[in-house]
Image (cartoon, rainbow, N blue to C red; front, side, top):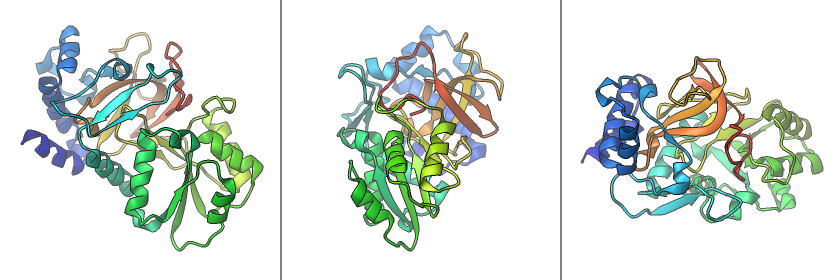
Length: 324
């Protein structure tokens, strides 16, 4: 079966294979995703002239709010939904197989940080836990299952979280949290967490004033006595995650690439180092659409990218005004 062969290639992809694999996936999705085929045809793209992954047309991310985006015919096993100000203003992403999301998320994390079995994961994700269909909660829940439930979720129970943080652990402690909750912890319960990986996922959800990533990391570092803050960049519309190890730049992995487009011309690629809107190829999106034009602003430096904010004409999503 073509789909299974492509899935296997995606899981085992190397950096040198990415371009050829992206082209193969493009032709697969063009043939099997009616909405995407209509979009490409309306653009009057000459399919035969596409030779590089950044030449592949990217579907505007807002389509996830307006359409059910599927490559192939299936009933979704799970539907991820973004947060929003109204129930009819959210993105929805249907997964053919939840196990695929778990597999790809584990691969990306472990390639970057090592085996999940070495981690104690403490998740401070109150805004996400209040929703039943958050992709971030689903990922962390699976990570906990995989590591033998070393750790857990903490809705608003700082006392219990602090107690866990103070318990000795022979491994690596990962505290992953939404920005406003981590700020509450740092400001109201300052402590020494220099031996803990702190990873913010963004998101103020109107509970705190918006701030730059540098301001956020400075405040967290000061309150928690730690040199650097890690970041996770992901969204409902993508099944891949990108991680930053504290330098403000997210690393592309072998299943994804990011480049920028001109704000005045959505079909023109910007030069590296210039600010533009982020386009993402996420091969994990095999059953939806791998080629997504986001509403985030950023710039590319080598195989890494920065996220600098949102496009002015983009509606602000509640899950993260900065970069999620």
